[in-house]
Image (cartoon, rainbow, N blue to C red):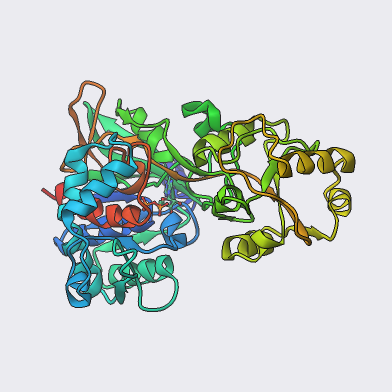
Length: 456
Ligand code: ADP
């Protein structure tokens, strides 16, 4: 009788555990954490090699920040360049990447990115992505033949991932910590709606993206960007991979560098030309209606100055001539700007003291400028516009230190056994500036390297 009770109790505990997901343990060859571009490419690469792979994604859908990539992919010496008779060589690509990053990127990693770009493009083409060179003036970008780039890229990757029985995708499943034994990463604890469990793996690939949606963490690594807006990014980008890897003694590089945009609102950014075009450009005012900065500062410095204001925000004020440019029109329309035929009326619309705003604009129009602008415009032609800006973060340049095999490097400069990284969570490819479009190339190139290294 007693034994039966014990057995029944045991069965009950087992059933409860199975239901809640708690204490469940799963084994696989490779665990990939994060289902954006880099995670999908890594997982596909593992499956292509015939190994079992589980990909966990904490959100309900795959795609991460990759799916909102609008520009296209940067690549050099591809078949598309050859077919179009347009030149963008590996040397051009390397130079552009290093210079944009103020020569602070790791040249060895950049060289790998560049060398493998053309084969990455061949692979994406095989998967069904239809690309073309953007233009002779912008030969560095391959863009879709039609439609939105990021969603098509994620579309072909998901389609490919679906071909493999050995690739098990688990959405709404968040990795919370790495399991480390004798200095080797042997899996991770994950949690889903039912509870938490451990996935043991011979290798773990971190592909968790950046920390763009974690303003506190951004401010921790660069206090200039305290109070930065995060709406130009997707919710999953909260730096989890960095936190998890730090517990494994991982080293970080370039964490102070972010790509931030001073003119940003409603999930998009707007070109600073609105403020920098000779004769025509507008100004920024604080919520008192005063100028507070040289608006022609470099974008990151300008963003930092706006963030210093008490509202961490400003209004861009410009006239009809700026409105008539594509940049001005986009900013006004998407930024849901205010418009009036007089400066006084405009001031009322944005709840700013009209006398102050009028004086600010009169001073500017007369070339009175205490902030050191060398390029000045005028605000003289009605209607006048005011658009609020909330400087936003767009990309995390720094991240986990990795070597050429995508192994995560520890603080003693040694690879951490069992741990790999790819995509935005890794550092070293950007330094202090990102060539738009290198990021999804990096997802493919380092996703593949991580996948191959993980099955070695
Ligand atoms: P990358 O371009 O490097 O692939 P993305 O932002 O496109 O970066 O993708 C990163 C993905 O990782 C996002 O979909 C994000 O939701 C996911 N992710 C982040 N942290 C975790 C976590 N702790 N567990 C599971 N998925 C995560």
